[in-house]
Length: 447
Image (cartoon, rainbow, N blue to C red; front, side):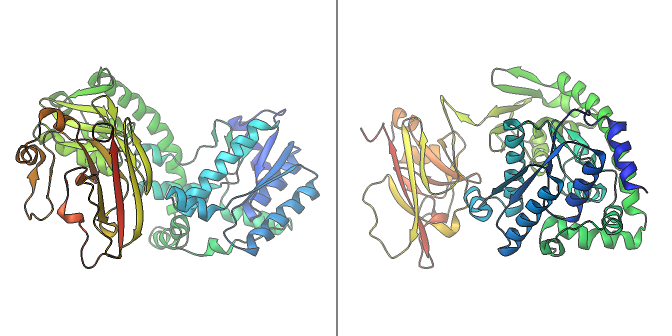
């Protein structure tokens, strides 16, 4: 294949951009992005170069930056560079380094595009990248939309090399003496994409030698399939979903009579932040009693008599607070403060609105919310669970007192009722090394 000719034909056939557009090329210095530079240069496209230094590989990261800067000088084009403390930011946001790098990269490219004369951002993703993406999406459970892979154009992002295989790009680089740098982490398989590239797909090809080519053909078919699929799903969603204020109500019997109702439910719930696994779990609500629910970060789907109700995660007038880690968190007139510290047999606080929990037993995020009927916990010192309603009766609480009570929840388990009792499963023990010191303040009890 003549890569240079095929590059031009691919862009023209899909009308990816017009001749007057200025392009911002995302260039790492690797073979794919350096070939992209050369192809754009030969085609006479006006372009600039953007490079992200993620500072993850010490002197190699600086080497790559210098290499790309030198390439920009050789092509006589603008050079834009940014440095990220990726590891620190990933730790702060509790993301993997790869997820953080991707988020930083695309956010910066878009900011750069908006603040400069560039019309589109070009990336050097090729056909093999698309094969890997589709395969990973299949195992992630993204549904039919994940099977279409990466699009040649998404808004202002263009991938003009999606037609080319990795071997074709490397052969072009060799024949045209195109210089590039090698990222040694591409040869390590502890990153998900590399694992699929280096381990999974080669094993599949041993059994099915044409597997990758077949996947590429299927990607094109899946794009057409998705168009038809989307039309059918939209029609069924319109027939099933009844809006009621902030909530959406779905009649259970009608849903169960809908063709492929499991898939329809998945498509409905995915728009509210539910994962594929949670959508499968939600199927059990079709056979459950009233009151059962499944939660995403922002919504709950609740079985209520003959309906499934999708409702924002709110209680009364005040919403829930998702607590992502130690720090101060507000809920209307209430405040919770969490500090992590070493356990050294500290004096137990006399204030019932302060407590210590075994940090090893707590997994963030936590949810601070008002209590509701059906809630239960294992009161400190008791081996059996107890409904909060019964616990409050035993505590001789008034109706007003009960209305003002919040609970701290982790993965549907109540860990603490501020002012009253912690759950026995999260108490400090002789094995405790680190604790979470929790302080709760609310206008109802601290004026």
